[in-house]
Amino acid sequence: MIPIYTVYQVITTLVDFYQILIVVYCLFSWFPIRQGGFAYDVAVVLDRLCGPYLNLFRRIIPPFGGIDFSPVIALIALNLAERLLFNIIL
Image (cartoon, rainbow, N blue to C red):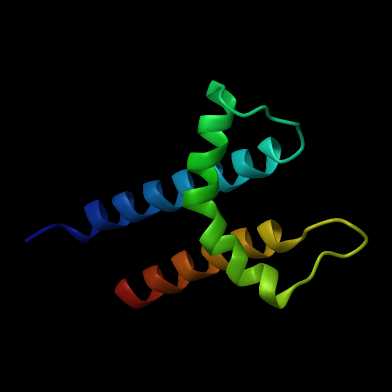
């Protein structure tokens, strides 16, 4: 049987890593990226990992004044889901 603390650590690490990916995805969106370079490849991978999750919130919250607040709401939702999961487990 796997100890609950180990499951807690794995889930926390994965959620933290995904949150970092979302922040890096947002930072990449601020800069123009040319096709064919390393930065473009990283941006494509980040878009495929973070895009579907962020699109859930983009449907609900449209950009306001040209600013997309969906990543902020997505990070809050991810954090709340993690806390809710731990409250159920523990």
